[in-house]
Image (cartoon, rainbow, N blue to C red):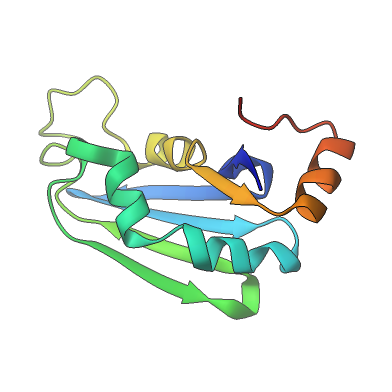
Length: 121
């Protein structure tokens, strides 16, 4: 088993509304969706974001588009117009989720390395 950043098998789209961030994580390849389902859990996202998310995290599965959608509540310091944070926008959380480490089997690791992707040390 080899570890890679999530960004090596998926991309993200994110936005914000008030104090909530909405993040879509989309597998590049349909066969990698199972990795998202197994490893990009509410618990993993909560650990990864730590104190940035003070409220509930809800995960929605979208199997027909090989994607997950996360809603992170109480996550933006009161919202863009109320926060003293330098960059509280939900879009920055899309980049952050892509740094979540995932573990892949040898076949996936070989494919990723052949594409020039670097495993984690």
